[in-house]
Length: 171
Image (cartoon, rainbow, N blue to C red; front, top):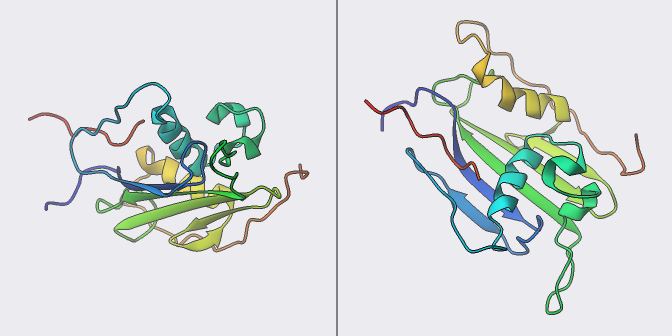
């Protein structure tokens, strides 16, 4: 396969996030990808999962009242879970993100206790490092140096202060 000319979502893994009690993995291929399903099947939760793993801090950004609302709350037949985990893998063959690897994997975990962790390839990192790497692709100058991102553990307490792919242009 030829090298990509942009940054594309490659894989999304969701477990314990909103309606996804069991792990769901969406592998995204080049081209147009759509998420379809009946009302209430979790289509919007896929979009929320992407926003959340990329650093959404306000519960309203993922259609929630409080952040721990993103953790699977249980049903009459299934117990609530104690954590939500989302992992996003981005194709970085074109090196548009400022990290010298072909794939960038960003993970976010939230425990019902309020503890939270981000990881980047898969080392723990700060919120700012993980989200700025993912968001700067459009503005990064590819000719500039690509610094390695620092590994900083980001754990804090809650009491402390579908877009699955972009279609390449038609020829």
